[in-house]
Image (cartoon, rainbow, N blue to C red; front, side, top):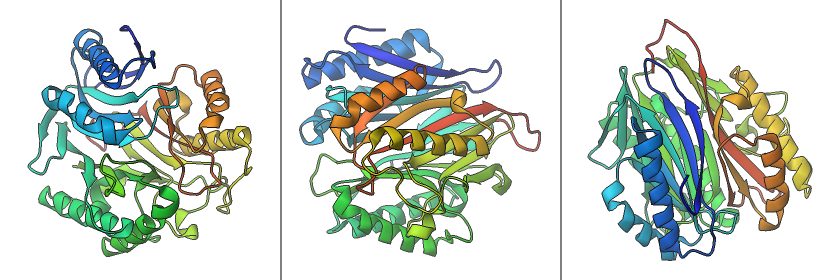
Length: 375
C-alpha cells in the first residue's frame, strides 16, 4: 500500500500454470492535482508488480478519467515508458471525487507481444488471447463510427486467422452522450453482426454498451475487445438466466448476457453490463436505486449460477451510476455485501434512461476437463 492510494487485489493462484490477478487502484486524496494522482497510482502500480506480484505482467489496463479532454494526453505521456499491455482510457469519472482510477488484469507464465495493428497478444498453452483497446474513428455519426470500428476489427481478426463469430468473447462500447448516440451503435452492430453470421439463431457476444467519452469530442464511440485463438467451439458457452432475463434481441439489441470459456484447468466467466431488468425486458423498480441495485445483483447472481459460479469467484466489479447523488447509497450497499471484491464506482449513464445502475464482472473457477488444453 502506498501513500495516497489504495489497492484492492483478487488472486487466483495455481502452483503449475497461469496465475491471475485483478487489481483496482484508487487515489485516496482527491486534493491532489491530476498529475500528482497519476504519479501516485504509478508508484502504487510499480510496487504491486515489483514487490507483491513480481512474476506477473499486466495484460490489460483501463484508466477511468474525470475529464479526458484535459487529462488523456498527460496520462498517455506517462505511459510511454510503461506501455507494457493493452491500454484502455475512457472518461467515466470515479464517484469518490478523485480524477482517475485504474483496473488492471495481470497474469503469470504468459508470453506477450504487440501485434502490427497495435492489438496485444498474450499466449500460453496453445491459446492466443488478443486484447484490443482504444479503437475509434471520426466518422460523422455514431452509426458510421460503430460500423467502421467493427469492420476494421473483423479485418484485424482475419489477419490473425480469427473471426468475430468464432473468436471474439467480449466487447465494450463507450458512447458519448449515450441517450442520443446509442441508437446508432445498436443499428450498426445489428447490421454488421448479420454479415458475420451472428444472429439470434447462432449467438452474439458478451458486451457492455455504456456512456464514456474520448478526449476528442468528435469521437462518439470507442471500442475495446477481447478474442481468443485456439478454442474449440465446444469450449464456449452462453448464459441466459431465462427466469430473470430475456434474450436481448427481443428489444432490438444484439449481445449475450454472459459467456463462459472452459479450459482444461479453469472456467472464465464474462458477465455483460447488467441492470435491473426482468425476463420480459422491462425495467424493474423505476426510480428506486436500492431495489434496482438488489435486482441487478440477483440477475448477475443467476447468470453466475448458470456457469456454476458465485460471487466468491468474481475477480472485480465495475459499477456504473447515472446520477452521482446515488453514489453514497450504492457504495454502502456494495461495501456491505461485497467488502472483499475489488470494485470501482463510475459515473456513466446506462443505455436506457430508466436504468439507474449497471454492473459488469469477470470470474474464474477451477475445473478439470481433460478434453481441453489448460489455460
